[in-house]
Length: 439
Image 1 (tube, rainbow, N blue to C red):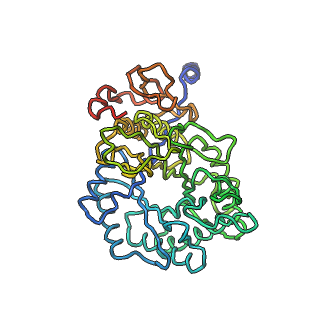
Image 2 (cartoon, rainbow, N blue to C red; image 1 turned 90 degrees about the vertical axis):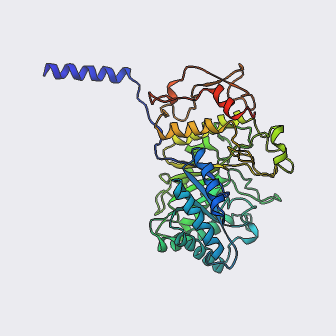
Image 3 (cartoon, rainbow, N blue to C red; image 1 turned 180 degrees about the vertical axis):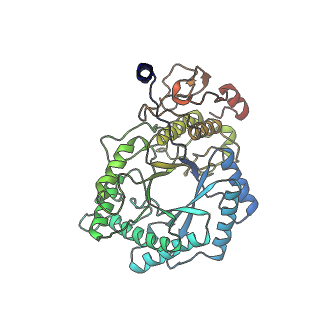
């Protein structure tokens, strides 16, 4: 008995001096929202999927666009989906699909349109067994993808209409495949909630609560979704993902607790899960500045509001965003917006490859972050407080000042991302040697 008490005392003392750690999710999918692999040419489809795999992604989200009157995939669409499914499966990539109307001119508002859309979504699931997760709609809280946003009296028109579409689509898909994961929301991170403005939008905060109110008013006794998706973009590309929106209705990666609380307020106590609902960040992007040597690949003009950042800052922000998401218990997946840049400068240059498919210097850093997360080498004890992973600026400027990360030099890694004792970190000088500075 005395020996047992001695062992117990030692164990208690060790518990006091050895800090507890909480590992990040080992199962969180990390992928990209990318349609370049969705191609009728199987060779091109495989090449684009291979680029995603080489960057470390284990999931790809493609889009399937519904047009009014359509109740099933066309023969061409079936062939494209077959190609995409085959190439994704070959590379071990999990395939997601966003099923959406093209824009606000084709919003399915009538009973007939909702039925047609639901049948179309069910056919996507039927024709593509490799797609086990579908997202219904895209940013229904903004006027680009859903109108009307408001009723004549200023009340929310979009959230109740979207809730009705989601419910009907959920039922149609479950009849085809009960195990299919139906993901709702996919909301934009910003919105005004002001019906007097010419650009009518809802904030994700208002939209989630109004979805919940519509669901409760419907009297439905079964769920309308198995998970919730959102696009936690920064206010512009120069804003780091560590920025929380404590005093606004916007939602970013740092606003996880707000999202969980809103979903709880909206749905807890009903047949629809709320605060426990799985989350997917199905779009997050940081646009980079294009070096002079690559400008000929691009056309158009960069909008002044985008505020693209150096490639090294993109790497930092993606590292922070992925690490934060991995430490958020309800988050099951995060998709960076694009594998490869779009060529139109008015659109998105947020990929890990330039438009000619050559890698940016951010690629090996993001790939290393993905590997660290999947290895369980991220310590979440600090409750979303992002630490560095052994990299510092060559200059003395703060690491999180936008646009200042112009070089890197090694230092002794901190415990935050070095839990795996045999982890190898690629030396930064070697990274720049392999891929060019591109900053």
